Image (tube, rainbow, N blue to C red; front, side, top):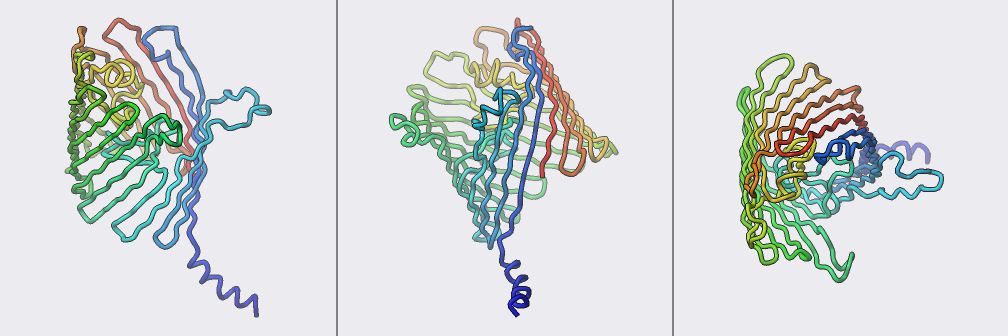
Length: 385
C-alpha cells in the first residue's frame, strides 16, 4: 500500500518540484601576437587560455536562482599541479535571484551579466575569457511594443575593501519602443567614482531598423559631469547600414562609422574625450584591440574615428565568415597627424556539433605613424552544454 501510494503521488511531487537547468562551458583559445606594441620583435607572444564554467538555474513558481562558477587560466601558469592546486582564478561569475511578479516584469538581484544597446555602453565582454558581470539590482519591463529597464550596481564598496577609500556606484536605465528588428530608446548612465572624485552622466538615443534586405543603426550620446576640478563635456555618434542580398550564401555588406570626441589639450580643466564606459569595445573598434586601448580613444585622449567596411557570409548553416577593414583617425589634433592606422580582421566560425564550435581568426594593424606593423591570430574551441 505504501509503495502504491508513493507511486501515485510521485507525479504530483514531480509537477510541484523546482526545475533545474544545468549549464557548462569549456573554451580553450590559443593566441599569437607580435606584442601589439608597435615594435617589431620585442614582445612576440604565444599563449593558451581557457574558460571553464559550471553552473545552473533552479526555477519554481516565478522565482529562479542562477549560479555559475568559472575558472580562468593560462595553460602552464601553475608550473606543477601537484604542488600548486589553489585555483587562484576561480570565481563566481553569476549568482543571482530573479522574480517575475508578472509576465512582463522581472526583478533580478545579485551578480549578473548586463548589456545595453548591442554592448555599446554596457556589455559583458564575452570575448574576454573572464567576461564582465555586475553586482546589481535590476528591474525589466517588456510589453508588446514598449520596454524599460533600470539597474543600480555597487562597483566598489570602500567599507569592505579599505575603510580609507570611498564607494563607487553605477546607475543606468533605458526605455522605448521595440517591435521585431526595430527599436528606438532613450538611454542614461550615471557613474559616481568616490575615490576618483568623479561624477559622470552619459545620455543619448539608440535606434535600429530593418526592412527587406536593408537594415541600419544610429546612436548618439553626450557625457557631462566633473572629475576633480575638471568639467566633462564629450560625445559620440555611431551609424551603420547593411545590405543583405537574397542569396544562398547569405552575404552581408555593411558600411560603418563611429566618432568618439577627443581632447586637444589634456592639460586644461576640461575633459573632452568620450569614455566608452563598460562597453564591449572588442566588438566595435577592431579585433586586435589597439585602436581604442593602444593609441587613441581612452588611452591618450585624442578620441577616435572608425570608418569601416564589413563583409560577412554564411556558405552553409554551420559556417560563417567575416572580413572587416577599418581606417582609424584621431578626433582631436594634439600636435601630430590625425591618421592612426588601418586594420584588417578576418575570422570564421564553424558549428561542429550542436554543442561544439570552432573559431579561427587573424588581424593586421598597419600604423600611419612611425611604428612597426602588428599582427595577431587566434583559434579556439567552444563547448557549451
